[in-house]
Image 1 (tube, rainbow over the protein chains, first blue to last red):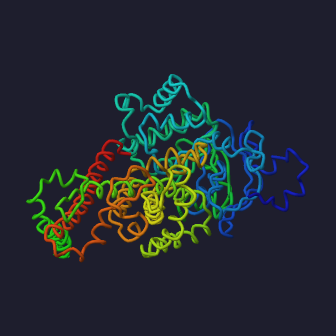
Image 2: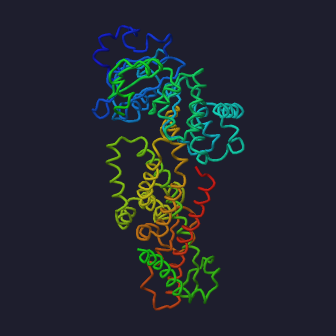
Image 3: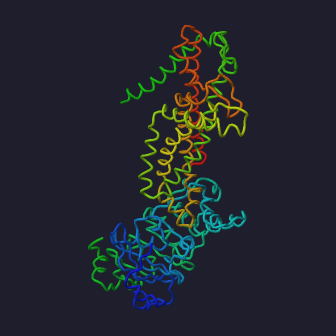
Amino acid sequence: MIITSHRLQENENITFPDTKEISPLKKLINSQSIRIENLDVYIENQHILKDVNLIIPEKKITCIIGPSGCGKSTFLKTLNRMHDETPEVKISGKIFVDDENIYDNRVNIIDTRKKMGLLAQRPCPLPMSIFDNVAYGPRIHGMKKKKTINQTVIQYLQYVGLWDEVRDRVRTSATRLSIGQQQRLCLARGLAIEPEYILGDEATSALDPLSTKKIEELFVKLKEKYTIILVTHTLRQAKRIADYIIFMYLGKIIEAGPTEEFFSNPKKQLTREYLSGSFS
Amino acid sequence: MLGIAIFTILLLIIIGLSLFFKALPIMREKNLWVLLTSAQWKPFKGDFGFLPFILSTFYVSLIAIIIALPFSILTSIYLNSYASKSVKKFFEPVIDLLSGIPPIIYGVWGTLTIVPLIANKIAPKFVEFSTGYTVLAGGVVLAVMIIPLLISIMVEVFRSIPKEMIDASLSMGATKWQTVKKVILRKSISGIIAATVLALSRAFGETMAVLMVCGNITQIPHSLFDACYPLPALIANNYGEMLSMPSYESALMFSAFLLFIIVVLFNGISRFTLIQIEKRYQF
């Protein structure tokens, strides 16, 4: 359901709104991939996201940080329209992906989701073999030739560094893998639908340090091809891999900027307090 | 607590044993193989062939499960994945209510509606004459009885699938139906089998409703429109009447013992298969 906010209705005839005004990141980036305008999200009349305006830079890693319950995950879910599955959620505003408002009625929800590879907090293999997990996406999107499917599966398993570990048991159940391997499998599965964006919802919080490192390295490798948006709990992780940081608090974007500048010279008092650990 | 648990198991063994000893005379008197495979049922001449009753029990139950399974699976899928909250809230208690209706009411309903329907509308298209009291009527009434049971178990099975798994499928751009087919059904296959086993056990033993609609003629049914005579009906109809003949009493006890063994064996075998399935497709 789309309720266009009042302010947006007045400006409806402006096709390309002045992004300078709406984006805290605008000055620092040349290209734009996801543009969010006046995004409000209500869950059962609770105002979860409040007037979010944002541009997410292309082929970079953008980390969203903030205390628990600030709306980070809710925000991530608006990007692949997973809120459509819960009728209690009301969304207003516009999200432009490739210059197309994904909340427009004409946009196919399947196409939107196909553009977004999601990596969830806990790895969740589907109830099938390792091979079928990776082949799942290509198959539902119409890939039929066995040879092509084989190639695709092997390619993405190799990409996430899992192929050598599982090559002799790709036909066995995916749940027998370690949790770190499962998360890499889920990443391969997400990549196999050939998305343009990768969304990570605290994708390493359930993993051990070594597996976390592997996933982080993959993210850095992936940003050559994909735009990556990560929600993270750990500031150190954001510091390690992010190019841009967005700091959210109580459903609002407080501050956003390039990683180095953000950590060395935060502009807002709230950000300084959060970074110093006064609250979390 | 352990004592109570042991007592429950003992109860099962006691029932089994007492049936066995009561059935022993007829098993001594006749060849067990003949008892099971003969179709001759003439108690006054001393012919006790149980094949018609055994086959009738299986046929009626089989027809019931064939009718009930698709219905229940589709309904549970709808209730789990498609129905809105208010629909769910309305339907789930109603389904529980349905499984609480006494069998005799289903029997009366079957006699009043299903039997005439088969006699007047359905059977004439296939056979020359049928009273309506048939295998098919028994199967249909039984199906209606086990559908609520199947649905309430399957809804529970589907509900136990983690939401993250369904989200994982949806977030890859799968449609709801693709998710149902490839993830939900696949994940709950063992639960569906378990539900089916439970429903079949119930169907094997169901007496009153089936007895009222299936004709109770001792014969091997050759079509859906023949009358049949399942084991529970045999016991219910004759027990208490013919006890002056010791071999008849023993024969009835034997049929009870047979039913008992069928249900126990069936449960055992299906449990074993279930474990094998889970081992093989440990997802």
